[in-house]
Image (cartoon, rainbow, N blue to C red; front, side, top):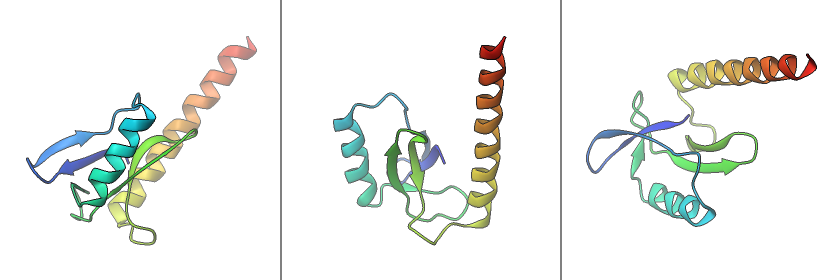
Length: 92
């Protein structure tokens, strides 16, 4: 998931995709202190980063709620559709 609620000011926070490695580490440290919660179930979120999914928030392993699972399924479907369109464009 790309968004969370920042607990200090209760605003929606969307994690940037253009963070430096140092900024990613800082986000991870901040998240480990309980700064980001999931809007639907109020669970503490962690920051993860990788070459395929980019920067994102995650429930603790095994604690994903149903709205999160549905959101992730929609996101994966959308990303797959974008890849397929990209491949189709480059075939032409």
